Image 1: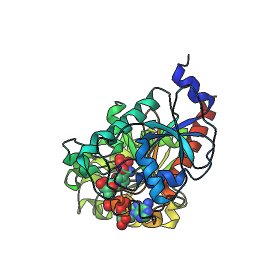
Image 2 (image 1 turned 90 degrees about the horizontal axis):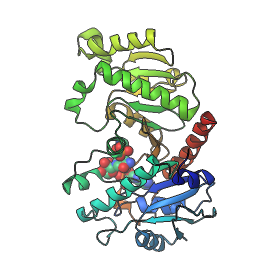
Image 3 (image 1 turned 135 degrees about the vertical axis):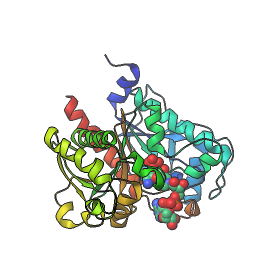
Length: 342
Ligand SMILES: NC(=O)C1=CN([C@@H]2O[C@H](COP(=O)(O)OP(=O)(O)OC[C@H]3O[C@@H](n4cnc5c(N)ncnc54)[C@H](O)[C@@H]3O)[C@@H](O)[C@H]2O)C=CC1
Ligand SMILES: NCC(=O)COP(=O)(O)O
């Protein structure tokens, strides 16, 4: 039986968008993306006046109608529904302010709980500034970890994607000194399982081919440059290769040579061991045209590939391609998942 939230969401798919850090470019890229006509209802979870002021400064048209759960709005360009969450303090673009941290997290929490309870079909996030949230006394390492906590998920997967490649990570926002301790049999099995299920469910890839990076230079050089491959990664992958029929696993391969055409043309995804092993390659191949997807949550979440770029807020030189691709990908993920439910 569906509840009232799900009923109104099913009538017209709703996507909730959080613009993120109010002093950064999040509001700018959301307003820019709203200049297009979208085939779903977009609900912006933010301060109404922040968006109207920013649109004025950017000289872009914007119409925002109050969001009501039991009415749906028509799809028009430069318009959206607004789920108003008031700012704590007036925003000066380009100036981070800890007093607005709770606002940022309130928008995120409201949007995430709305996805969990079926009110929205997907969450698209704009960039937050992790440092200012921590500076205000709240421990925050990223949306990925925050949403996992809210959703009570022990493990999720960060996967970035563009036209050339997908890159997923075993570990996310942790210090480099801690990475090795997070590379365990369990974390590898969980990562590959979540990745496989996510690619099947949302991208229609029935048996994904996953190329896996080693951790150490040259994948440990037979144990002479690090032992993690011999002790953990190779035995775990061998175990999965024998037991797991749901995906093709290749590796571990040295991270410095895995990102070449002959592998990428066969790989559905490259699984890197840590953030800066995989993401610089992906961002070099398409920064601003890539997106970030969290797999393993009980709802769809996509995001931009860039940060809050506070130096560019209101500058008018900001690019919104990543936000547009994040919304389009969320729509496709909703469609692919719906086909499986029917
Ligand atoms: N999804 C999210 O919430 C993300 C948040 N961040 C956070 O953002 C903050 C700033 O991070 P940075 O490392 O400085 O990365 P950044 O992506 O904000 O900026 C890197 C460079 O790219 C430029 N840039 C970024 N987005 C752009 C756009 N849409 N159009 C034109 N130029 C753009 C910036 O001006 C800067 O020169 C950090 O707190 C970081 O943790 C970073 C990545 C993703
Ligand atoms: N490098 C990706 C990034 O920092 C975004 O992380 P998240 O906020 O989406 O967890």
